[in-house]
Length: 114
Length: 112
Image (cartoon, rainbow over all chains, first blue to last red; front, side):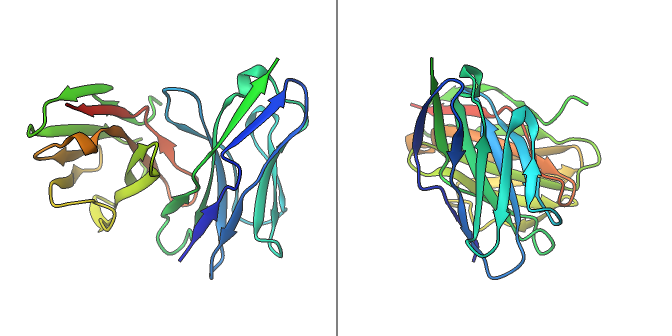
């Protein structure tokens, strides 16, 4: 069975500093990986996805993530955060071809301080 | 494209009452998912459909929960009777194969 672990429930960071949100997954089959962002009182919005090809994936709002198969990780990074990046970030895994079912991590709250 | 549309945005009901949540997926999407979000449990997949057919309902917590998708443009999630522990935000999402889900804005359900 697939699972996703987001070890950090909250990451405080100062504005304009770099940030990394960690995500590790477990799966016995090929995986497809996603990062979603949820702003307060809103639904989830797709940030980026890895399906195949280049292991470095670029998404919206200046975020990027790197797929590392040997470490079973898919960490999300941004070189310089803004106050407006304050939100909950969810990592998710899917086996794509079999069920297209997304399994979400528990989320990481990115709290950007001035 | 109006995105995934959920109604109502907020619902307050008394324990024991029937609650119906509605979802209109994006036209052309062949998958539809219902999720529940709570502080304690995070995002839980309740049920999902492929081409209007329920594929996996193993996440539906109890027989009080039921979901239907009578056609490609409409789905409902019903709770009967509702209980306070059903209070949560319920999300509907749709997708076309592997292209990532599009979520609705959610329905915040409060059962008092």
